[in-house]
Image 1 (spheres, one colour):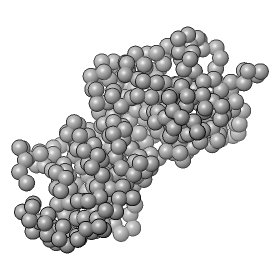
Image 2 (cartoon, one colour):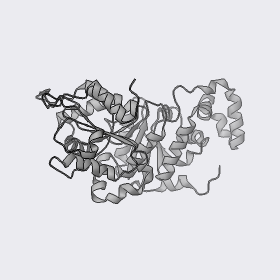
Image 3 (cartoon, rainbow, N blue to C red):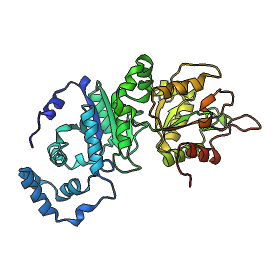
Image 4 (spheres, rainbow, N blue to C red):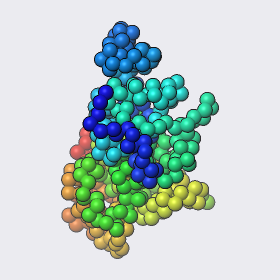
Length: 380
């Protein structure tokens, strides 16, 4: 197949510092698990027809079920979303899928060629009979420590292995437009805590890339103490404990509304430092938070700016974040403090504080219901 220019050679010849890499899984990303249409066709004939159409007899050497899966079962919109992501960010594919265990790189390129994606493939992660995907990606990253950017797209949630660099497709079992936006944001700005530094030093940069901005439609501004715990009352020697029940309730809001989570809590100071500097084991409270978020596949998409103090502080930070993103359709603020001067933001606030004690008692079912209504979802 002829292309207007040799993208594959150009991508392959780039220095690591110029590479935007997508570590790509296949099952659950391009091929939904429920899609089994290939078994309705004569796959031997299909393979022969493809070899003739592509004018390449190498297809005749491929497994007929692999050819059928790619030809009949790959999700059309997922393929379009992947191509748009790769073209927009001048990115390349490094295959991390277990498909590489039974196929060579050339064979994988033949299969991807059926959707005109072969020109984006430059490599695949190393593997042994006993290695696991996270180890393989880490080994590749160790061999290429100076990549410009990278994102891991997989239906296996690997956030704890590659904090801030992952897009999880397990819920939908294919690469949706929303997942494409998230992957693009990571390739453009790095993990969200990197984005915070961009936002502070170069405020115009966020507004110049519409592909990134457009995906923000619904947002949850999240406080932690008094929302995901009962105002820090559940403490022990390990630090503040996060309540699984409240995190599960947060997950319910996300599932019902499709909203993204923006951290507005003072925890974002520690979260940014922990994630950015990879302080493994140094902060038990942060480990507890991340463990619970990972359990429910909840990603922190960003944080409000760290600018202001006093009773106007958090409202000011939320407004500053919103001012750079005028296309936000709906948002809710989950917070337990009663002294913030929310003003016009008040109708968007769900307060988790007890009226009698003034103490945050956590994200209960009534708060979940109210948050879903504010975000325009249906609570049923």
